[in-house]
Length: 194
Image (cartoon, rainbow, N blue to C red; front, side, top):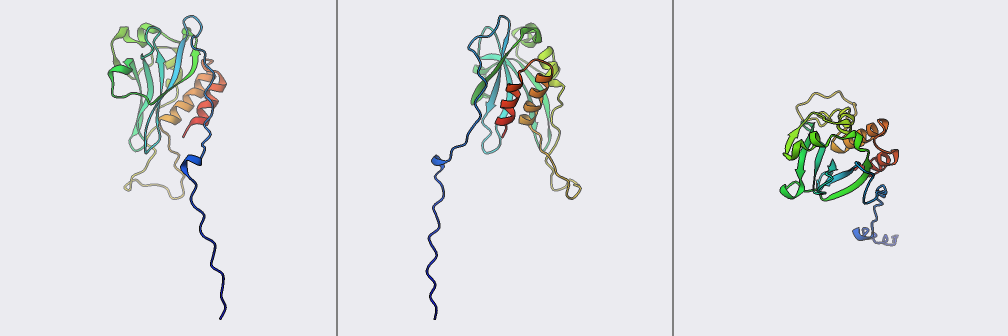
């Protein structure tokens, strides 16, 4: 009769407070920018348990809580559409970002205050009205990228899900190509994407 020693106990799982997820550092952005420039922020909306929703927020010169929210709205099952919420007041909505990350001051020549802010009247539009919007709207909204049980799918074909974060990252690359964003801003967004 042979006796084997008992196996060692299973190690405990790591404590969540001991896990450190290294997030990239946001780009350095001064409190105030050049005359006529607009501050572009990344508005992050908590998407728990799913990915966070991302949008650009172009701040008004007169009130940091009023701006233009430019984003891809929708979902991976039905697809997305591009939308600009003009004169969007963050105090008058239930749709408040959990984080606002300053990305860069962009030259005022890429913006049209009157058209972007619709003379102070809130409105939702899907047509670009200035150089900044022309640039980001060059990147189409993500289409449907999640299949349902009834969808016919070619076996072995990889499906790449595109969503609002994908659109922000791709449009940031376009902003760099058009000379509106610095390359380090797009690199930050690539690194931050969930």
